[in-house]
Amino acid sequence: MTDHLTDLIRQHATSQPVPELDLDGVIRSGRRAGRRRAVVRRSVATLAIGAVAGTAVAVGSGGGGGAPSLQVESSISASDAALVSDAYRTGGAFSRGDTVWFSDPDYSVDLGTDVQTLFYTADGVVAAVSDDDAGDAPRGWVYVGTDGTVRRLDLPPKVVPGADAAADRLAYVTKAGSGYEVHVVEASSGDELAVVPFDGGYSWAGWTVPPIGLTGDYVVVGTNDAQKVLNWRTGRAVAAVPGEQLPSTGGGRALGGDHGSTAYQLGDARQLGSTADLTVGSGDGRWASNELSPDGRFVQTTTTFVSTDEDGTRTVVDGVEGNEVRNPVVHVTDLDTGRRITLPGDGFTYGWTPDGRLVKVEGSRVTTCDAATGACSTRTVPDGPGKIRVAGTYLGS
Amino acid sequence: MRRTTEAAYSEFARAAWPHLYRTAVLIVGDRQLAEDLVQSALVKTYLAWPRLREPDKARAYTRRVMVTVSRDWFRKHAWNHENVRDVDESVGGAADHTADLAGDLADRVTLADALRALPLGQRSVLVLRFLEDLSVQETADLLNVSTGTVKSQTVVALAALRARADLVTEGAHDD
Image 1 (tube, each protein chain N blue to C red):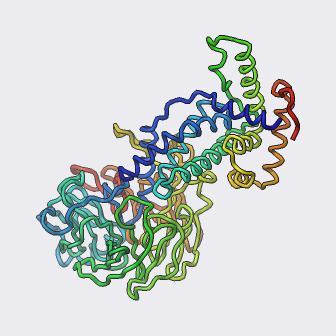
Image 2 (image 1 turned 135 degrees about the vertical axis):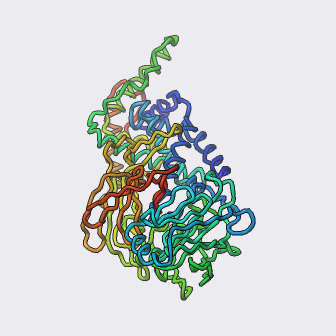
């Protein structure tokens, strides 16, 4: 009897006409979702445009022949250094076209070649520059200090570095035989400080080497299954941070766990706080995007995706069912107190300043918000060609 | 995703699509919903492909996503009696109504009605056990319920189908 019923169920199923699979649509949706997931927003923007597509970053030669030439003009004098440094820490850094400025456009440096991304370090930014926005031309790396100094950095091609907003350092990974090596570099001089070999599986994302974060004495490497944590001074591995993701680090901490919703103290991987209650959906459909501030005090959480159509139309949708969200918000959680604020915006609205404030750009208006209180102030910057990019904002305004 | 990896995913999606779609139709009882469900699940599988890579793992993953998402959809829409269109819309078209075909049509239409009348949980158990050929344990893991629940829901669901006299054939025996 049961056999008859089960046969009927099978026959019923196989009798169903099957429509054609819209495979192109599925892959398009997958690529878009992959870009959104890959861009875990950080105050140190680590993803080049090519990397966001999920493929290996084709950045060409880092500092040798073929790299863009620099023609530097700076408005910063030696006597401005302290003022510029303060402005930078509290107001962040921006770029427009070939110009970098530290919070105030009066403190600007023209590089003569387009700036693609900016990484925060203690006393300046590391800029990825290229003559070609499409990424076909070789990419170069430049350090721009708050004292107006500019130095070309001789980094290998195809690196996706991590930088420490509280130190004059950046780190990147290269392949070494069957394993990898972490390189820690003094950002202002380009001098290599340490090379640390490590083994670990890596296949979950499309770059040629795993992504890396750097904070204090620790590097956090985005290997398979869990993030490997190394003390780069001693060369030793310490407790790993759970979760397979782009590292989000700052203030000696890193995010991990499901959807990066748990903050861990590096060294012993002690759990510090969680935003798991903000994750939406259930089972395999659960979703949230979490990002740590550069000083490790705050976590910014979004549960929406930003979809951009071929004609450039931008739509914010919820992360579970894809329904449009008209008034998206971001949540900012203070890890030490547990207090939380909510601000209007989506996953690409806010970047960070080096000292943990939120910053957003809308046209020529720059708004900075206190992550603890939500109090915001807005200032206007001069108009100019091209979009303003904030360190930590993929799309800028 | 690298081109060769995407080609492997495409091959998997094309091959898996018909069976996944049919499974989804039986679970959700609506063709359009089934299409949306499987395509959503395939998008998630695309994202997870770098760590799945093998068709069997990918198929199991996609099935898990389908089951989970369908339950969320039903919960959100409070579908106690799934308000779905007749699944067999194409049945009864310009077909030649021979006696055998009429009998087959009656069976299929009746089975569709009978399946739609089952709660989602029972329907899911039947589909996973007898269409996907999963074991009791595998079905329990997928639905996040106990094996006892799977067994009892199987018994209840089959009894409900058995109660439809037109689904019973001569010489059938009870299990």
